[in-house]
Length: 380
Image (cartoon, rainbow, N blue to C red; front, side, top):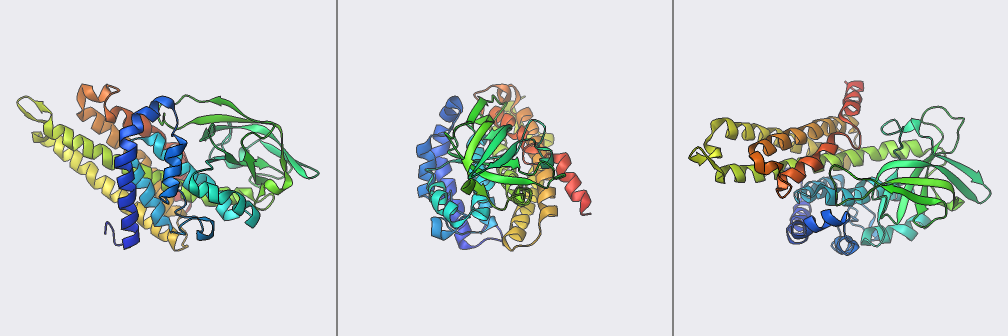
């Protein structure tokens, strides 16, 4: 077992995901970077293998597994070195669809969850706006009840899977008079709904095999039955799922840092300078060794936070620490690994060049480092 936290089933999952990454993702990832999205056939294959429904209830096709399984999935997908691929999957499995699984009615779950688990339905979650990110209470998108319908107006920004998602879970103000975080609700909006459009596909520094969009709602009318969870209680659903999101992103950071170090150790053991491999330079191998120690510490914190969550224990402090630490650490690792690749590390055909670009957002998305440190400070 890779950790005392894990069972044989956990280790089997790790082996299966690693095999999929080696056989499917690594050989094709460059092509997906060019097209800017993951083929739906690949997502359906992941559904067949059970990767998209790990945490979802068995009665809807899922595995009903625990949070540790999510940590494994995130970490192993990140070993692919393609952050955009990993983001596409984890937004679907751990950031968007949990809103449905956790707050949906039986009718809503029967309608959508089997497709979510199989990969036939791709999901996104739309909370962030141009002026409202981690400050969820500042959102301006509204939803007004009109008879048997809700009418949505506003826009969302930086939405991963926003272009290709079949179903988007949208946060909107349903009580404009409510102060702060009160009066926010979640809604299910299907692609093709009148008044709902992709304002533009956003060009990014990294995660290029993942689509990111601005979404626009102009008198977008949806059925009253598409309210997700309790009216005016959406903020609590968002906050609750932030822990899943931050754990998944931290798992990405740990996996990517581990992969970058593996690539770099291999490179410096073979790259010769001044008549000997770079590995023979004490300063280089010791710096890499220290980074390996830091990444291992982050990995154990990842497993500990996931273990607490899997047992229903409060883990906001641990997850916030983890997100802040791993998001900064993966960027420290990438900087050093690119430095030790020399000029080759600056060329786009090198894996490390892409990994540097992909990793940058991990200290920003899902709660910037500064926000995470404030969450820790509140609980100190």
